[in-house]
Length: 333
Image (cartoon, rainbow, N blue to C red; front, side, top):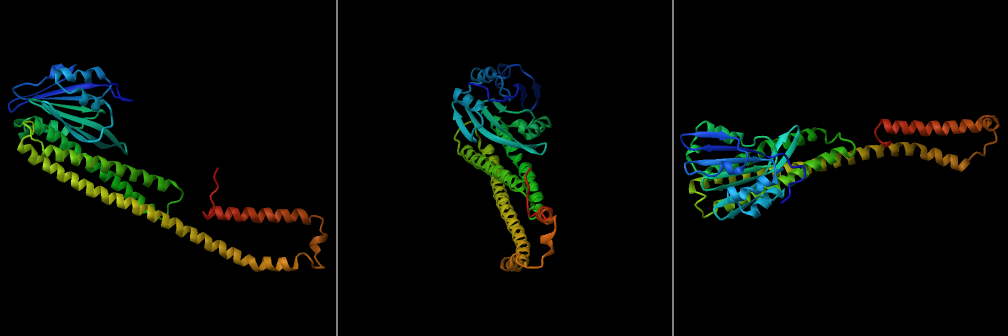
């Protein structure tokens, strides 16, 4: 196994709980947070830089080496994986940070008396779950499969603000679609559309993983937890429907932008056609008669030729400046 490129420093947090007690520690290695008979031990690992620490999960928690490979080979497609004595689900978790969407892989593993979570990046994604555990909520009386459900539910809930963020960006672009100039607008919409396609792919795979969790016939997945997982499925369905509407909105924005560009082009062509129409009869007359008049005082002037070129340059430059000012002509630097 090799650490991913730009992997973050690895840190550990352990939380032991049952109905009566809750204890949080900061172990130095996974072997200090092994399963216990009197409750659930939740080991949270953040960062994939320390490969030896990740590899030690094989001995401390009997995690299969193939699963360890999936943990460090990011990104993986969201999926459920079953191994002797444990279950695991790999998810993609997105959140908004500094006006940008950050994506990371999260692996949730659970077995008898323990749950292990592995995150790529810093930032306590699971703060709502920790708060529920500290408040003495009913989660304290349930097993590791219910904690795994609560963690999965938290990951899925993070998609809602991300889609709202993308929806707001599309709304802002919608107000400027007809007035937008240049390819910048189109690139921005295409970038959002690409993100939406990626989000839909991840959510669809997540929905499939949840369906597999509901079909599990294992002592590590109770019927009560399956009942709650159906709520996660409903959330995935809502998110997918919202994603489809946003994708349609991005497509409509592109069509609206192209319509605006076509409309502006038509306006420019109308003006240029008027200018050409005015000069067509003048050009015709000049072509018929040429410079064949007998009395043309300009032909005798000493500076006629230089003045002719001054007039040509002035008219050409003036028209070019006018076209640029009106936005009909773009001059790249």
